[in-house]
Length: 240
Image (cartoon, rainbow, N blue to C red):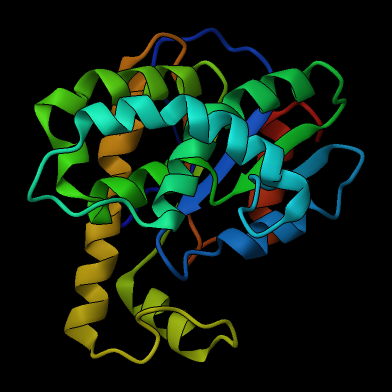
């Protein structure tokens, strides 16, 4: 599947308000980090934003507070023989649960557009595709609905990058940055890319079902250079 460039959709029938919180999404090799760095070259307009890190001491209060609030719900949902959450997955759920409150507070004082690379949509897709089975049960639907709608109210715009698989595979294999499928055979890489595309599609669609869902901008990074996408985003934000 190749995403059409400059395809703009309104996933929730929201008004055309100025985006304040933006996430860049896409499969491996799509160009997310390259675009976020390009946007970082406009510090007066964009502020790169990163979620709390479990291995960072200053973020410990965040994980303690929201982890404790999250634990009872996860305990009720757990069903054998599903595996338990890993420490990393529990941290992701704490981020998904609590980070919207932090961002909504920060938005009030921020002059720039807040840009995330691998933010909530990525985390939701990762857990949906690779998380424990009990979080995919019918009993977990209400739990997820609350998280999705909380993010739909926080996330204004999703910039969705993709291109042909041949380009993606070349980028994964040749870039210095490591990846779980970097040295894997072609069928394994293609399956990985398609699984993430499907997961992103479900997550974005579910966000769009909530009131005030985010708008979506899609760009083909095999046809557009990062500078071209930056210019389009500047025009979208009324900054060109």
